[in-house]
Image (cartoon, rainbow, N blue to C red; front, side, top):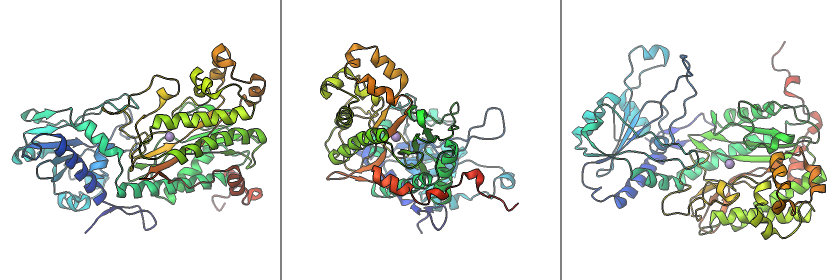
Length: 496
Ligand SMILES: [Mn+2]
């Protein structure tokens, strides 16, 4: 019988066959890449995530499964190992052996056979049996995961265990092939992404109907988290919620510990809320920008529509074969054209790009792969275009040609970042393109970002995101019972 990841009758049932399909894709790919892979003896060995203590205490950080391990097995428990036998195609999971007392604190000890059925693998053992089991299967060589994440610069931790020195090890072949498998999403993975993006879209829509001047940024964050979890079953978000209002909208990673979404929304503020839920490990990454009071000013429309034009141009042009770096420049061009029409910029747009003016207003990349990680792996693999050194393009998380089955974010933005504007003003090559008299009005404006999650199809793309996007759609959505919105602290939470 098929088993599932599910959080209740109302949330998506993710079949464990999703992970079996993933394992098969990885095994098939390695068989074509590795000479003699179909002869007995080559085994992929992965280590799952560990529970990590909060400093010296007996409390742990919330556990999140390691993404490569999740992709293969969908296992929810920490401290596990998984093996794939390339010759037989069989998969084996190893679970920690817990003492009897585990049952008191953590619950019933799950028998190995129950784990086997739940995760639908061929065999299950305890971690302390790793060496014995691998030897008994004639394992000669272990393929281990070592590679550098091109977004963080950090290196994966290859699996290791007592007795690993009895086997040959290969640290090179697995990482690039595994990343390539993760870049192309299977039909079942696409269904999960479709679900988590829909849940996250709805959570954004719920937020838009509870904000008004006087609401704090963290109250918008709380609304998102509540909706994504209570309705969608998303226990985690995929990254720290970014809920910038007013000037905070120009801080790209606002919401961190030192700036924890604690400003109160003011009348006339733009909001830039970047939040995404996580379901069965799969991430959504959506940004909505809208006025705190539900009605755009003329200046807010100028900036919003410039970004919306850029987003629309990319959604129209994205299809297999197109270079992502070209999409980035297309978005920049369209946005600069719109800002020029509004008299914020002057001169030739191509000259502006040559001078780096595009990166003054959008200092980040157009978008990135999305999957188990919010910045998913595979952006810069051997054999594909390398990271550019040019302004703006250097921040792009991939420059690859698009391919059907990729899922990416499209997230053009326009920001008024004080220090970048100061720098541009001091640089004659950039300063001449900027209409400084008009730009002054936008000091403290913050920014606008429009971020959608899209699937590349055989003929173009499908936008999985479902939120109000035009000025009219946003004003219409936010007008619903606007006069009746209460601040969260004004609602009666307990019968007192
Ligand atoms: Mn993003």
